[in-house]
Length: 110
Image (cartoon, rainbow, N blue to C red; front, side, top):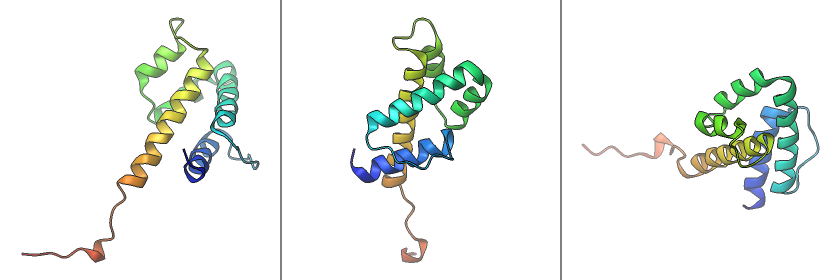
């Protein structure tokens, strides 16, 4: 992941989880730590809000359920943080590769 994509990923995550944050995140690992700490707090204190946020971010519900289940392979806050990062990376990829072209450049041949 290059610097621009990491900046975009950081902006998307901070926008949803801590809009007042002003310091930048330098690495993807630091971003994961930041996000997992926020999600741990939300699991403990605002689970309903966290679930609505997962829905709004379009994180796969089955994956969220699995991450929160005792059968999950990782701690729930870390697993959810990874799911959020994965989803946000998908959003960035989609925006970059499927941008709508300017319609004024289209030629219509009848």
